[in-house]
Image (tube, rainbow, N blue to C red; front, side, top):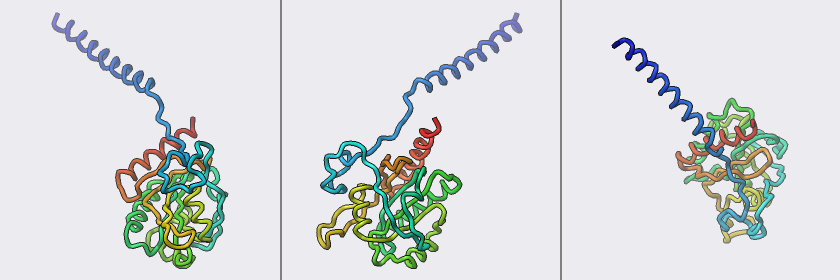
Length: 224
């Protein structure tokens, strides 16, 4: 009699375990899939956006560009075709937030090093100072992998307009010339359609973790 009940007790426990697994899988299946927003200028702090775009509500994408990287190679949108990428703005002589941002971008580089779908792009906001040799020196010091991460310089007006009209990521300092800018700590996640999918504090480790998690979500959206 005891062995009879012991046998059915085991059966009951197994059945209970299977039921818990089925309920868990069913619950997960019913959860809405997490999707990243598609950012428009009207969704961003006005101080970071060119005034001509304040009320643009849809169809915002990163404009075409033509810049030069740390190796003297011309970098255009074609280099990022069908890529997800993380962009930021910096300068090599920045003594404050840039070293932290570069360190965190290097950590992102390590995380996506073997993923051909993901790249990085850092724009100098002081292109006159950040010549190709200066960028190359900086790249070597910071462990930049050329195939994954471009540090770019070029025409200041073009970089300014990319920052304010495309990436919505820097402030106009209102002090010097028409293209003077104050870069922020923002990292910007861009999808394969050249749309902004997220903004992250490049000095905050928690935001870096969120960025890496959001890259996975974005990648998954292309495989479904």
